[in-house]
Length: 165
Image (cartoon, rainbow, N blue to C red):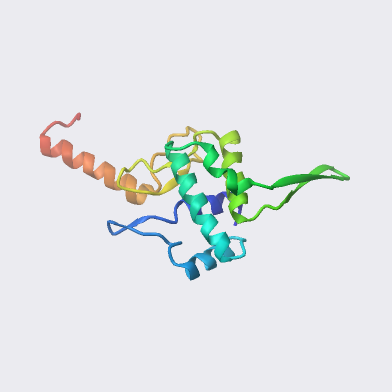
């Protein structure tokens, strides 16, 4: 699993299921397994930090906070250059799972601005990374959120008798 997949998995770890907000990281044991499955240690401090980073990243992607909230996630992280026959490679030092996820978010902000965003369905708490050429994806899933919203709009149009609204 790459860092983008891990970032999306973390952002999407507090979905609404059957109308009820859930948190797949609420249970310490389950959260530790999640962290290990995504390249972390699963330790209690790491899990606590992951929850904090997730909450800050969700707020950032929704536009309701600033980047200073992530300062603790990247504190002490640095890169060391190494010359190789083909050029220079960089090795991250002190980059635990919360730091790697934060750095992936920062990379996406630089290389693909605006493509990481919340689902366009106000009743959904999931996020998406728009890979479309036109950068116009709106929903976390066309099969669920997109279809529901389109069906709701169609129902409202036909109910009101206005086929153009």
